[in-house]
Amino acid sequence: MKKFIYLMTTIALVAGMALLSGCGSSKEATDYAYIEDKGTLTVGLDDTFAPMGFRDKDDNLVGVDIDLAKAVGKKLGIKVEFQPIDWDAKEAELKSKNIDCVWNGMSATKDRQKSMTLSNKYFNNKILVMSLDKGINIKSSADLKNYKVGTQADSAALESVKADKNYDSFADNVSEYPTYDEAILDMKAGRIDVIVIDEMSMVDVSLFSALLRALRPGTRLVLVGDADQLPSVGAGNVFSDLIRSKKIETVFLREVFRQAEQSAIIRNAHRVNLGESPDLKGNQGDFFFLCRRDAQRAVATVLELCKTRLPDNMHIPAEQIQVLTPTRKGPCGTINLNQLLQEALNPRTPGKREILWGERVFRVGDRIMQTRNDYDVVWQKDDGTVGTGMFNGDVGRIAEIDAGGEWLALDFDGRKAPYSVEMLSEIDLAYAQTVHKAQGSEYRCVVLAAMPSAPSLMVRGVLYTALTRARELLVIVGDDAAIRSMAANDKQQKRYSGLKWRLCHAEDASE
Figure 1: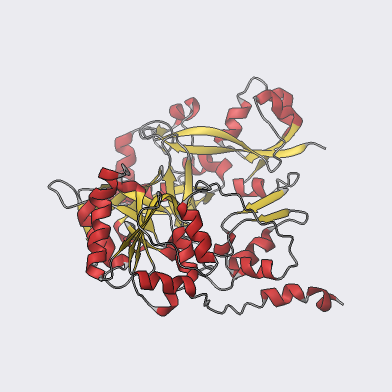
Figure 2: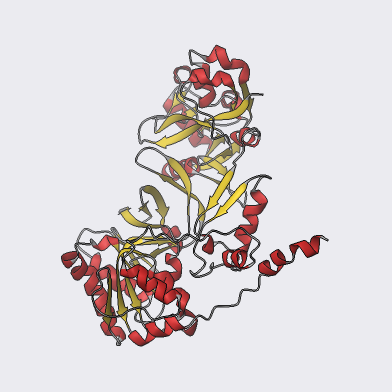
């Protein structure tokens, strides 16, 4: 039995170079006059083609081409309507004037250039071969004869393989589907054998439940994490409950890779984990403590460290320094620290654009963080890779703000995405982060502002998590009494998920 793969068109944004919309008439002036007279531009599209045009969870049409079409309509003063069509009938729909144009991943072939008016090319096509079987290795079109091939009818992927010199050798293996979604759903032969989940301590009950429901029978699940870190923000304490149940095979890894074994960061993290205070004597190589019992003095020291002392004396650039704090409020909270660090590290200068959003200022060059999951954001890398989704905790920078203040260009570690000004509600400054937000991340240098805070935050888990975020250098600025109190306080919020009990009594329930 032949294994199943499918071919799809991937879209790489290259402004001014490669693909997309065609209008039914051959004369531009006539086309525009016709649309202007109607007052409406009817756009035909495949509404399952993410990220170009697709339905979100509320069944609204979203995507790159949707936004582009709306922008063009706004520019021309013409209302834009969208009409889902059968993709393999797009030319017929266009000729019958059921739609006015196709704007959704239609390739600019030589035949189409002769039969319809095309816009300037602005995307570049690539063909991607996908399979669930990791053993499949496609090096050339000649290898396709060994597999069942699925793709969308009348797609650029299908056009490409049909034009290939080897097509006759695998033509009988090719199946056409109305949409890529249906092709993917029909890819049954492959199977994911192992799934590895990292930072498992951050996974809550709902997320873990969804994961288990999505797994195929026989899939091996490997969970990796640190049970001594803070529990998930969401409900439950899944990772800890799984370990404490003693029903799940558990391996404890003792070898340290993040820091050198002789690191004072490691020694002090172990001390905290045992309920002991970290060693707060001065210089310990990669661990420093600066005693500041006054909050304003602590703030001033944090600013000085980030702006001058660490860059000048330790040769650590400011962008590689992350300030952490247990709390959002107060002088040493993220709200105040972010405002002060922004002015210290990225001050207002003539010609540098900024936007005022509520009480916050966002400026070109600012370090920012995504504060909620947004699965509809379309991003692109410099190599042409395109994807969707920005997630809570992603850190990036503001690369550009347009002159009209309507949109921003954000760069999340090479993933570049346009954000409308309305999307600033899901963005925050990230010069300083809470320890909870920093879970799962590591930084070359961490500056921890440790001052007395709310009792629920003055606990061992917060201190331990903060210490273990630093890879090369950790500097604690704060109150020594508060730090010792945190190390001694092992109080945890009770999480009554019932998971440990269910695992321990699973055999009783099955009898």
